[in-house]
Length: 180
Image 1: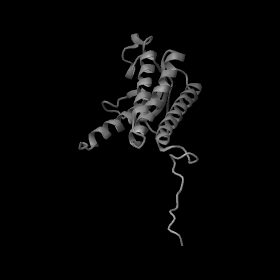
Image 2 (image 1 turned 30 degrees about the vertical axis):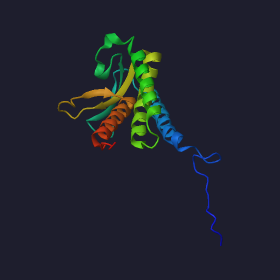
Image 3 (image 1 turned 90 degrees about the vertical axis):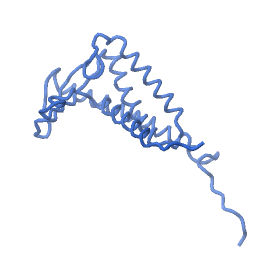
């Protein structure tokens, strides 16, 4: 038997699979595309089946439903008078998230997932803003007590953005300081 070392092509080597630096970013961009597609599909489906303002409770509950609402402002309908500039601000925010994503270490998977969620949600709402001049919201939660009486209507994009920002905040809180 020889002392020859078995050499396997690494993912970073030519002829190997996708380089590890690209894999993490592909994960984030793929997640962003999936979130944006789910958001836009769900908006189309709900708005095709409900009239504007109509409500439909789900699963026999009194607290969860669908409603068709157009929001020309920001969160919870605030600042509707800023409707003309909001698509541009949302677009700029999406570009910032892309640069953050590109600047994130490829092995920081949790951060890449969080940024992918935020980017996907931003894309869905940016599309609505530029094409429809308002964002389509449809998820209704009403637990019958404040602040859930009812909670402001939202969509898949809003949910993804909130989860992504929450993951980023949690990651910053739990991050251990590095010794230099």
